[in-house]
Amino acid sequence: MKVHEYQAKSILAEYGVPTPNGSVATTSKEVSSVVNSLGGKAVVKAQVHAGGRGKAGGVKLVSSPEEAESFAEGLIGKQIVTFQTGPEGVPVEKLLVEETIGVERELYLAIVVDGSTKRHVIIASQSGGMEIEEVAAATPEKILRVIVDPNVGYQAYQGRRIAYGLELDQSQVRPAADLIGNLYKAFVERDCSLAEINPLVVTSEGNLLAVDAKINIDDDAMFRQQALEEMRDSSQEDQLEAEATTYDISYVKLDGDVGCLVNGAGLAMATMDIILAAGAKPANFLDVGGSADVEKCTKAVEIILADSNVSRILVNIFGGILSCDTAAQGVVDACKNKGVNPKLVARLLGSNADEGKKILENSGLNVSFADTLTEVAERLTE
Image 1: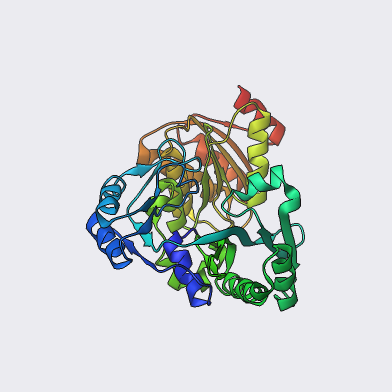
Image 2: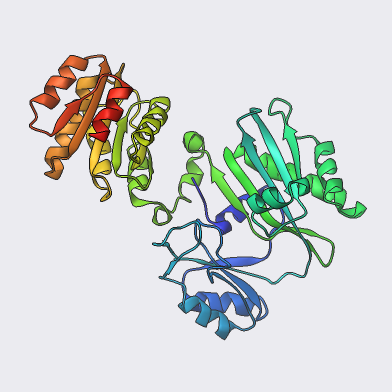
């Protein structure tokens, strides 16, 4: 789950990470009032779940409350398009208004989970304010990496190593180590998959300040983070993905035309590979789960059908706890509810496979069957 910048900063502030003074506003009048309270000058930033706001006109340094109000009127209630949003953009409903900062240096700091080492990794760079992917591609030597064993936790010497690697002044080394430690504590206790400060600014007074912040919460840990659930902004999410989340369905919308109903993440990945091998493109990743009932399977197929790009559906079920007849009935019910008869390719193996095939055969739906992944590819090509 993603949160807005102002929400990420509120979380970091709870853990002692210094952030600029400011406030979030939902109207142009509120923006003007906050700017006035900050002395007449401020930075106004659109709150959206996407990077590249500055290049898209979503960030502005204003010199008066009137200028701020005018800028806000042109943003609030509008769509902003960045390189991360796609052509449709995302809505701007809130603006973060913050004090201006005297900047001496801009640094990059983040913590992520490294699947290859099964460890937390602290990433830092002197090239703050830039996309870390660009830095990694152009000047990889500028990126510092420190691996933290979660069984041991963050150690102060690791923070000092990063501080020296960033060529901070000696007086800033201990504050930097403390800040990194606080960021790590927030990362662990809030079940983050990403905690990023870009830029981490060294102010003209020599202080460290998180001028921008991004936090992603692991969806599988949300049962431990109920307080953060209130921070979810579904208007920033793909509506089909948001709907799938409410039914505990793992769904990611893609840009192909083959809708996929699968149980199991590994099988879902293999299914997408087969679709691509057949010269087609998947319309989604979807794992309905191993213990889904008919209602959940029905909802999953309805979500697939709600994607206007879908022209055919591949049902690839390996029956276990979720039996094949349960999945098949969900397909039939969804098509009946939607009043459609899409082209279907079905591969049903395992528990109640024969029963599932009979349900589809007797449904009147346009379905062809396959027993192997090779046959699946052939059916899709046909």
